[in-house]
Every structure is written in structure tokens, then in C-alpha cells.
Amino acid sequence: MSPIVIDPEGSDIPGESARLREQGPVSEIILPGGVPGFAVVGLPELKTILAGKDVSKDPRDWSAYRRGEISEDSPLYRWVGTRSMFTTYGDDHSRLREPVAKVFTRRRTDAMGADIHAIAEDLVTSLDATPTGSSVDLREQYAYPLPLRVLNELLGVSEYLAGPLRKCVDGIFDFVASPEKMIANQVEMFGLLQDLVDYRRDEPGDDMTSTLISHVDDPTNQFTAEDLVGTLYLTVNAGHETTVNLIDQAITALLTHPQHLAAVLDGRLSWTDVIEEALRYAAPIAYMPLRYARKDLVLGGETIPRGSAILVSYAGAGRDARVYGDTADTFDPTRANKDHISFGHGAHRCVGAPLARMEAQVALPMLFRQFPHMKLAVDPHEIGGGSNFVSNGHRRLPAYLHSK
Ligand code: HEM
Image (tube, rainbow, N blue to C red; front, side, top):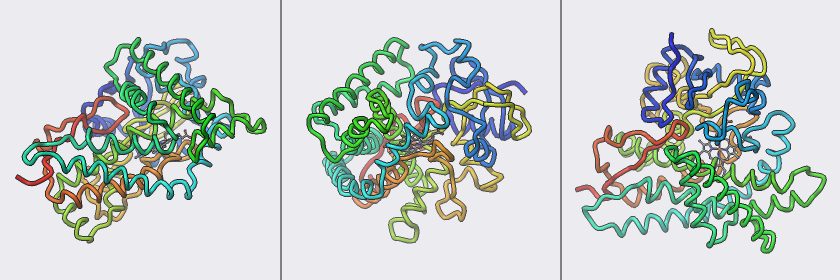
């Protein structure tokens, strides 16, 4: 079987996942940038490698990287070349993850509930001002700004930094940008995050940046000023587009499955059921670049040689028919087994999962209760895919807020 070439633009993630699954739970692929690797799409196989120690996220464990074959203008570089807890292994990873994991306490997440509520209410009020008969883009006008404003609250971003930072966040997921533009955007974003640190040093608050600054100042922690900016960069990137996709995909699923929308609105179905099924059905991170085999691995009938690149497919795992049966490709919040690993599994599992779930728990009922007769403004198949292979969302989500 010839290796499947992963589409860098992610134009048909469910179709590509299905083709990969046809080849088995583990298969050879060509990664964006033309680099060979392996995709793991099987749920049990993924759990095995993610929970174990034989697979690393440190690019120094990747033979092609060590040989200097992954240059700064490779489309993969932005995912593997920036040092943070995302690209480290073992003790190095624990050192960077621990202070951040501590920030996401139950108390802090719960305390953000009121902020999330206020942000969602404000956005719904703006939507309500749309002239009757005009359509809105629910991704651009609701799913996108909500998590961004939540992140600003979480990180203590000042008003004057919020605008420029938003521009940079857009740039990070712009996969058609030239390598020069991509690098310039990254440099600008690091600069803005340094400004944020300087600002919070002068004006500490009850926010994540201020908490991590005090962590840097304690010499027993081995958490440097550079680690701090890298962590903020990761948090903005990991916490924004992902949550946008969850809200976007859940809205889309409900608008295309009116029976489930009616059930959740009249209380026969819970919002938790809808959210967990949306996470399974359309994992907001489709593929996670990248992991590397630390030894020869025998997995799903394939051998992955030591030093190979491994692409984790969360979108594929969520549709594994060996786990979810013949209806794996159907959005059905009433199914008994909605367990998924769309927030990851093992050492790198998502630290922001409770916050993301809370955002969806507020955003979805607020929108659908205000506009219970919303309809898509285009045919479902015209919505199209997203713009890159990592982020599993839509470019746009046109809808009428009131039925016509
Ligand atoms: C629906 C929303 C979200 C989804 C689906 C999601 C998914 C994930 C996944 C799959 C991973 C593991 C990546 C891997 O395989 O290595 C991860 C890690 C991470 N997520 Fe999330 N995430 C979401 C929201 C958030 C939010 C809101 C934040 C913070 C504000 C956040 C911060 C992080 C961080 C810092 C990591 C890195 C953990 C590590 O490497 O140890 N995520 N996320």
C-alpha cells in the first residue's frame, strides 16, 4: 500500500481519516512538507503509545530533525521547533507542565464561570442586533471571540495588547502564509507576550501570568523567564482555536440534527451529552504533530522504526468502529459510549479541558435559548472544511438567527 499524503489544508478530515482507517490502525504517511512518517488512527493503539514512555515529543528523538532536514520554513516547524511543555519529554516536560497544571485549579476554573457567562451574554446581545433576514457567521461572530476573550481574562491581558495579540493568533493558524510572514508573526507574538509579562510585573493580578511570574521569581522552581513566555505562547495557541472548533462543531452538529436540538432544548438530553459527543465525533484537534519512536515499536500490525515521526489522529480515534460500532460516523448524543481521548491521554493530556468544557457549557445553551429557531444559511455540504490539518473546524458557519 502506498503511503497516504496528509493534506496540509485539512480540506476533508473525516474522509482522510476514513482512508487511513481502511489501511489499519497504524499506517505509513507523507507528512506536510513531504516528510515520511506514521499515522496512528486506532483508539486502543493510541492509548497504548500515549500512556507509555516509548514515544516522545522532543524533536531531538526524531532522526530527520537531528539530520537537519526540518528547516524553519517547513510547515511542521511551528509545531515541533518551539520549545515548551508541548515539545519536551520526561522530567523536562514535568518541570514545565507542573506550574501550569497548578494554575488550572478547580477554584480558578469555577471562578471564571461568571466571566464566561458575561462574555457569552455580550456576544449574544450583539448577534441579536442583526437585521432580520441577514445571515451571521457564527464562527467569526460567536465561536471565535468567546474563547479569545476568556483567554484574555485567564492571562490578565491588558486592553491595549488584546487587539495586536488577536492579529497574531490569526496568523498562527494561517497555513497559506509565506515562511517569512509566519516567522515574523511568531516573533511579533513573542514580543507581545513579553510586553504582557512586563505589564503584569508592574501590576500583578489574580491571573495566570502573575502566578507564573511569582513562580519564575522562586529560584527553587527552575522555571525561567524564557519558559514563562514559551508557556504563554503555548497556552494562547492550545486554548483558543481548539475551543473555537468545539463550539463551531457542536453548533453545526445541532443545526444539522434537529431531533437532538429539540431534545436538548426541552431537557430530554443534557448539554454534557451533546458536548462529549461533539468532542468524539469531531475532535477539535484532528491530528497532533508530532511524536517520535524512542525504540522500534510493533503496533497495530506495523513496525515503527526508532527515530520515526508519528502523527496522532484524534479525529480518527473518535470514529474507531471497533470501539463505537457501525454508527461511529454518526453524531448521536444518545449513544451509551461517548468516551473519547479528544483532550489527549497520558503525560500530555490537556490541562485546559475543564475550562474548555465550561466554555461550551455556557456558550451553547446561551446561543440556542436566545435563537431556538436558528437555521444554517447554506446547505450543510457547502460549509466545507477548515484551513489546516491540525484544526478541525469550518472556515465559516453562516446561519439565520430567526427562521425565515
Ligand atoms: C475543546 C478545547 C480543547 C481541546 C480539544 C484540547 C485538546 C488538547 C489535546 C488533544 C492535548 C494533548 C496534545 C498532545 O497529544 O500532545 C492538549 C494539550 C494541552 N492543552 Fe488543550 N485542548 C483544548 C482546550 C485547551 C484550553 C482552553 C487550554 C488552556 C487555556 C489548553 C491548554 C493545553 C496545554 C497547555 C496543553 C499541553 C499539555 C502538555 O503538553 O503537557 N487546552 N489539549
